Picture (cartoon, rainbow, N blue to C red):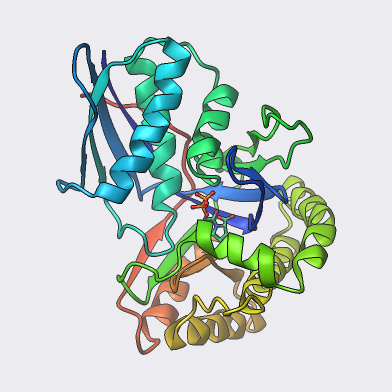
Length: 325
Ligand code: 2P0
């Protein structure tokens, strides 16, 4: 009745933003991501027959709002297994939580993976991806490693809105430098940000209409290992997502000054011929994706930007997997 799993955050190159069904967490667009290697969530789940309610520890602390989301995820697993046992969950991240680094993606991927095993459920990775998606959209992608696409899906019940691996990490081992520009929790979470955007941004329909083409370009770039093409489509998708969110009312401004300066530095490097591009999620950190040969130069350039607190460095990694208790 006990199991532990590890999953890593993923970074979308073609972004997810917007839900067509908030209850089932179905997206208005498909998305495409890379799973990271050395940033992780490790989660230990134990179901205790006879226990009422769940006990949750996140980085050694209790957090009521997060505990509620975790209990909802455990409810999905309990329903699959036909049991009502309470659980003890202990989860840790080795990176800042809730700062635009997709802690919910690695967190729910690890929770679903460990929880399913603790209950003896023999779920396929695709089934785990669907369950993880219902807890946090981007978690659907962290079940898999390397280059991953999460499908928009056509069915009303969401069973086809699932992630699938496109290419293993080793097949194109890019690296990622993460410039941390703030460790504060973001003011507007992704779920609320997406709701506000859908209700008020005049660009919502253009966002939805143009996404399929972007996914096609990114898939082709990955298949051809075409760095320049992947760089162009990724920066385009990132800036388009932020333009969409900036035009909400009130506008969602996830960047700080250092984030913007990092974007300029990355573009200046690329103009000098360094294979690097940026992407930014619903927070102020900048992720610079580069060829392995460029990582030291990219890290040095980002460290030099005033307001950058720290630069993390990771390769691309595997999907969710069992770890020793
Ligand atoms: C992404 N983000 O594709 C986009 C880009 C942030 C910006 O997925 O409401 O935590 O739990 O489904 O997955 C972050 O949103 O949101 C996210 P919910 P989630 O990575």
